[in-house]
Structures are given as structure tokens and as C-alpha cells.
Image (cartoon, rainbow, N blue to C red; front, top):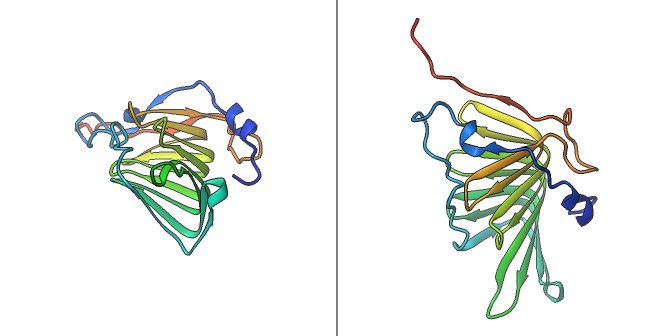
Length: 181
């Protein structure tokens, strides 16, 4: 993640919480969160305009219209660095994405400047002008952490230094059930 060191990214881990289901329209009007229970053991497929393999560093850098998919989860970005281990074959541990990052599941879409998908810990973290959308409901902030084990999403207002965040606050617009008068 060029321009943002690991310490600054780690310092961005905050404490405000938001359930991913809270972003949904009224209960019963949309499917449950597809993020909960996502199969992180499914194979990861990556397509891009270019790849640079740095085998001694156990990483591959994909650039240009990058699309990474795993089961029904899709990650789009200008650049994705794949960190892997080379024991008993290549095993992906982490994806670092930058440049107009979008993460899509069947029911949610999250956008930000940067993202880290930690496959071992089953966490996706987006930073920099982040939005999480489900149906017509939308939440915005500086940083979003999605726990794929639980489906829980945590949004913080301020992102780490060097990223854009609107006001340093979390904002949201939520749909309500339509009632007849």
C-alpha cells in the first residue's frame, strides 16, 4: 500500500460499531448479509492487465483493471498485491488493494481508496472515503472493518493519516418500511 505505512494503517483500527444488517432495509425485505459465513477457503481467482511476480518476497502484484473473486465475493481495484506462502504449493494469505477499491457481495457493496483482505483472520478492511451500501441504505466514514466470520461491520468516521475522510464522522441514510396513510 504505497503512501501509507503499516504502522499508520494499524493505528487506524478503531472502536465504533455498526452491524452490517443495520444497513439493510426493513427486516424481511432483503436477503441476510452475504458477508456472514463467506467461504474464505474457496479458491481466489485474479484477472488483470499485468502481473509482476516477486517470488523471493512471496508476492505477486496485479495492476490494471484488477478483478479478484472468491466464491460470491468480488474485489475490484487498479492494483492488488497478493501475499502468499510457498509451502506445499502457493497459498494466498492477504490481498492489498489500492485505487478505487470496490468489494461486492450479492447484497452489499463497499467502496474505498484502499483495502486489505486478510484471509487468515477473515477480515476485510477498507479505508479512505468508505461507503457501505445495501439496497437504498448507505453508511459512509473513513474506515470499515468487515468480519467475514460474523458478518459484523465496524465503521469509523476518521480514516488513517494520508487518506481522505469526509468529516471524521460516520453518516448514514437508511430506508424505512413504507406505510399506507
